Amino acid sequence: MQTAEIRESIFGSVAMAGIRSTLGFIFILHGLPKFDNPGFAGYLESISIPAAMQYPIALGEFVPGVMLVLGVLSRMSAGIIAAIMLGAMLFAHGLAAGTATLTGDDGVEFHLILIGTALMLVVTGPGRISIAGLIRRLPRWAS
Image (cartoon, rainbow, N blue to C red; front, side, top):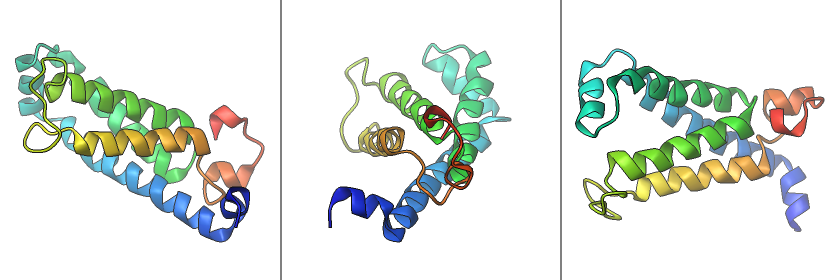
């Protein structure tokens, strides 16, 4: 079976919906507790990020997660998620300071998996089992 045949098959559509929804739910659950968490604001200040960034970071994780689950603006949402994860690796997990490791407490392996998954969705789009797939008239950037 060729790549195009797999992509057009029901298996490919179900797989894309599963991957997209899994990444979306991870970010919904990851962003939701950050909204009213004074501990997160304090943590941001401890790594030299203004506490006022608490809500933009929480929104930047929660809203793209919802959009991925629904399957609308998936490419844009996945790009935002990849950028947020890159920032988390650099600043929250010490990659910029040289203190990060691949595994362990400051490990970045989970972040790399999320970035790779998000970039795959940027390239492939949401699949047919999505709002964008059902409408089919959305421009490519809005799918």
